[in-house]
Image (cartoon, rainbow, N blue to C red; front, side, top):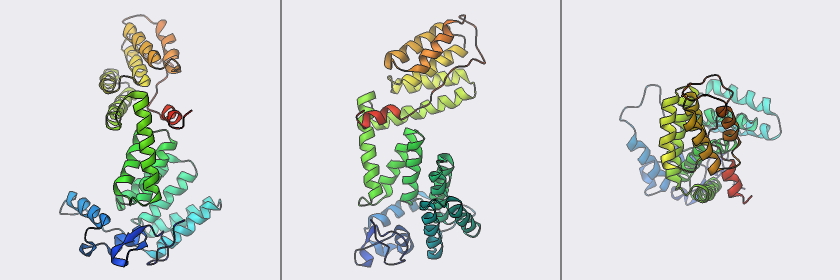
Length: 312
């Protein structure tokens, strides 16, 4: 278990600080004292990289993040309430803090944790993003965001959040080690299942998600083109082939729809959405565009990768 930071007495001591005689301090105190005297410290180097990417003029309303030990202590108290099952008490304390400290990343992070505790993962991610917007180097926010995406079975966004943890975190941090381990194991599972590198898998998933959004807007040709682009990178994605079948179906291209469903089932014989939708298409006439059909669409998921990763 991490000890308390010797500077503020509140945060978790997790980063060796050369300026403080190589004692461990918390990430917030690290941020508050970080300057050119830090030399080649990896945390100072990451800040320089971030600053170099920013414009010379800060956007209106943007300011340096607040470091407030009293607020940090109150947030820790709220999270202790949460651990005791006092969820409403925790949220009441945090929302009260938010009124006076809307730009404090500890507060927005804490609200995200409460939502995550309640299994409200989309809301949790939104609040973690608020914390990250204030303090881009909040490892805890990126890590908890990754966990929320993992529980939502959103594998691509989960991977990217864990990659951010590895990129900005201290290699000695537990969160970084866990993120690195997850990425390594999921990369192995993706290679075993799809014969794809992680980078190609993510590119393919981006194209898939764009196509899926088009399909949800009933933009069938745009969606079909997107799924074809995704399939060009990942030829063994059953949901991609299945959703191509749906697009063909709504465009009145029965033969091509059946072929796409057959391809999905060839990839994964147990892929039930393709089997169910194929039965619907078999009853249709070629050349007649369809609408208002009780069909099944499928987005990217993580179930099979979790099964492979855990050896089931």
